[in-house]
Length: 307
Length: 264
Image (cartoon, rainbow over all chains, first blue to last red; front, side):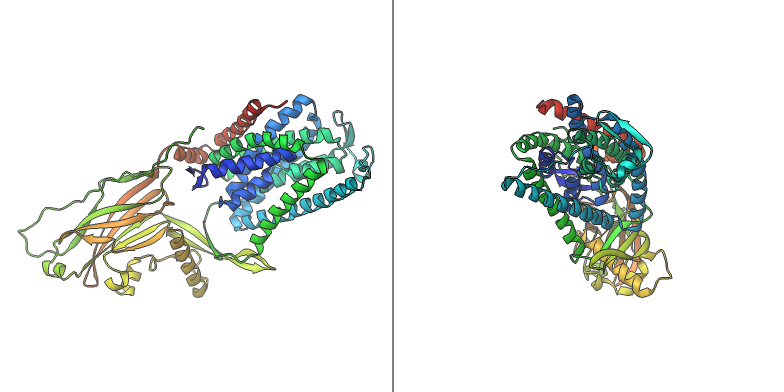
């Protein structure tokens, strides 16, 4: 069944979008990520203009992270103070990101920049995760006990000034890396339409040594606000948020997430991570092919005078 | 599932022609052409997937002899609102395809749909069309920067025409104009599915034995109707409120989703 998207200005199939939302929701429930990094490229493959895919992706991420954060708040695995500081950085990053977004769009290099960022980030994160999870799988197969990272180990990040105490995370750390991390995620959120969970989670665990059980809730909490802010600013400066598109994706997504979470409980952690890594790498490779393959037509038209 | 209603691809068109009363008393007057639209606005709904628009028109004071020999030709154009356009060309840099060269054109009609009695090249010679800026291949595209080399401008102009034709916005319907009688004709122009909203101009050109005689035009407003169009307008006119709405909708959906599918 066709539906006309008012902002993207194209006709699309409702069921394809619902299925897309459900599939991504399933994966996001299974792996505990927002799914923005999958939704945006999928929309681009489905011929939604990248600028609209990015802004609408950010809108869709709010729904999944909001429902996830609610669960974590109930369980008490959400550090509001840490989330708040991350958020402060996030707002700064998003603002910078949206400025860069509008600039690139004017120069006609937005699509290229989005694709490059995706290939670089997904390639790196996917590659690292694959190596790590394959090693873990080998270790369990050979019967060795998995090596756990001890919290309380300190690295250079913990020697920075302006320390702050985060009680729920049992953390006493400088605000500089926290703000910096928030800003980086905010920047990516506004340029790529992702929540940034797939970078935030490993960064909080490995760089800041936040206890794993608090990480996902806190990361989701800050993603709600970063992506809400991103959505608002995209809506006002670029008019690229398509609510119909976002709603269809969300509706599929919230349903899919529940089944995904159930399926995820049957798999072991390292198996899950290996699968997620393969998925991330597949998206990266697909986008890379588009960058290097000869386009069917080298010419493109766009409206002049608009940012 | 709100909002999933059947979208009929309907274009409500009822077009009429204006036949002028025969003026018999005066000696042979010059031919002229008239077209008439019964409506000055068309609303297209969400499921619009393209349509044919029929325009009726008439020749005034046609010479019966010329008419019998079929030496009158009519070209009808439906021209979309003019907008500036940037044409970009991708080139390979270090293996990656990047938008490098670009050329901006001013006042390019967003859409341009032509119907003719015969193939354009059989009606008049190309210089005529260039003078009149008539036909998708002869339409004059004004570059914003006239100092660019003519070769570059020509290359990008050709690419612009080609892209417009590929997306169905520029089209040519040979044989789309038919004479119903000596003076009455009917023209069928195509409305592309992605036809832009705005003020369109219907123009009719009369040729007699390859010579341009007269032009007549009428205006047609194309607008999108319904829910989707309201969303588009709100997104542009009240963009901040629209953003707040989008965020609230997402939160509400997230909350409801948890309520419905709650597992803890």
